[in-house]
Image 1 (spheres, rainbow, N blue to C red):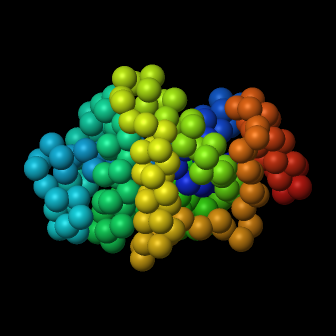
Image 2 (image 1 turned 60 degrees about the horizontal axis):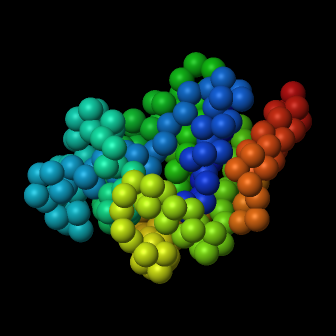
Length: 209
């Protein structure tokens, strides 16, 4: 069983994906980390994340970079959004993601184009979202826990800019697949959102027999 979990930044899609993986015993891939790693690699190599050739060079990052704690920072998130607009970067990471989805028994993948590009054949597709205010509060709390000093207003501005880039990029823009189930968790707790997602997946699996 392949489960695609898409949605904007700080929507809670990663938490839901991990919860679904635990519940159904499936491996989970946070595809956003791949783009964050490319973004961080541009910084490490002194490259320009807005230059398609530089960004493509950074796509050959070492696997060890995926364990770097700094990948979760707001700065790396912004870099990820910038490198993800490049066709060469997306092509470089495409096969890596599809191989993960093709694992025996299935997998859970979360990102922005899983249900539309990476695994359009997924058994269940979820589109997880929340208001920008709710997402900003969550991301601000996370950044504060990491010791970052960004204000709530700065986080909200960063999210708005990332949403704009993600929805309007030429390559694989952020879209809800036509057959995806929408989960707006603006007013849900983490457990409520996960419970709802599990219910959707279980019902879809039963209907498919």
